[in-house]
Length: 140
Image (cartoon, rainbow, N blue to C red; front, top):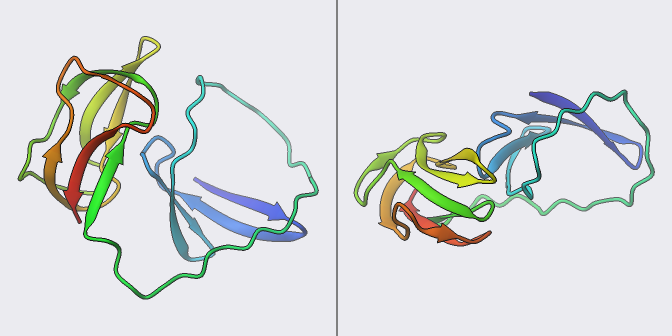
């Protein structure tokens, strides 16, 4: 999905690979960012472009350092774990399903944010998880 976002008169080209992945990977003018949007009920919106005034946002400077080797996957919303698809030692690819979380009678597939090897699974089927609760740790 490609969108243009205008903030304080400056337009940014934003590319989102999978809006349902957690974290969401957003590419802004060639720089990739990982974000954890707050979950809301599913909605369908049709809108025309709107100009709004917003304060300038300073983006953190990119570093040439590699990302930390240990990655955490946290619950994006409260719910019940209904399926776990990986175990410690499994090699996962970006976007690969890790587990399924049921919330408000809807099943949400939680996916790997990047390639790596599962180090720990902190949940089990039937667990009630809270928002931002640690579910998986993997090396990536």
